[in-house]
Amino acid sequence: MQSPRNTFLIAGASLSAVAAFIHIGCIIFGGSWYRFFGAGEGIARMAEAGHWYPPVITSALAALLFTWSAYALSGAGVIRRLPRLKFGLCVITAIYIARGLGFYAIMPLFPDNSITFWLVSSAICLSFGLVHFAGLRQAWSRI
Picture 1 (cartoon, rainbow, N blue to C red):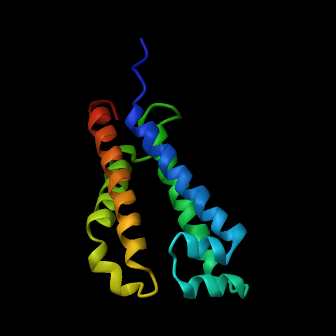
Picture 2: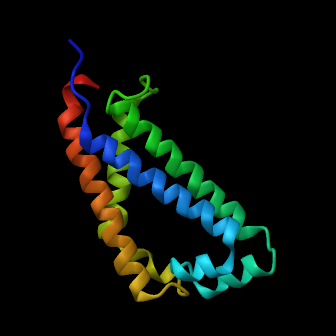
């Protein structure tokens, strides 16, 4: 008998994929999207000027988020088992939770970002991390 799917990890995969698509939207739609999602005026202006930096960094983040989505799907049993699955899911979960709780420590590195950006994005990351944690806890014995 096949084990039931892990809905928390499926939800986590979906959340990471949506975040990745939003990053791709920023690349496609440019400065207005960077501004709307709080990336800062400097990044928005660079995107509008056609600078290489915003799309390269944003593409890397989207690729990372798609990879995290795949790991959550693998942990949920939806796709084949990926390498170092348990370790990968632990790291992904820890990064989401650390980003959600530790935003104050990294705020000075990104002075263009608004406090609204930090509060909203940190709450989102913490939520993603808690969803992943619940899914990882549920799947722990079989991954």
